[in-house]
Image 1 (tube, rainbow, N blue to C red):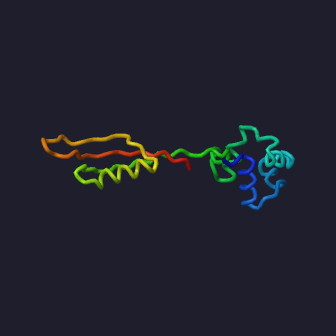
Image 2: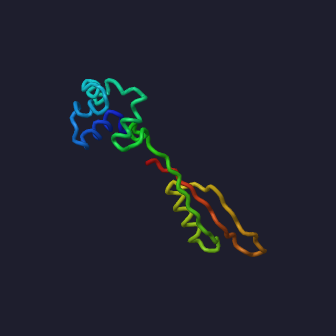
Image 3: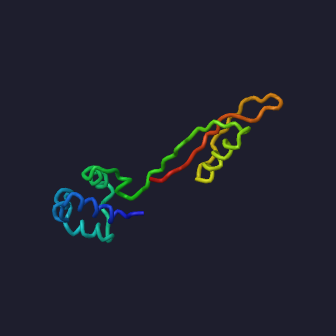
Length: 124
């Protein structure tokens, strides 16, 4: 995970700004910027929204916090065909979990069929 110091330095360099220039924009000393970029100190928490806004990013991204995204997938299954079970098992092997499963009422001699809802948590 990238640190604030690494992220801040990269954002400053992307805008082709010197430490002195960004210090002037943010209303702090160039020494403060140097300390931030060398992990010797950090900006006051109240400055984080302004810094994030200037760099057109979020405070979470500025702090290196990864976003959690949950994806869902719905699969229809009929277990009279092995392919249905294979497809579900492939997803489970790939880190998906079964969130819900709905089956249709079965008459005697019928094979299970229905819908399975799979979910996977992804960190971006």
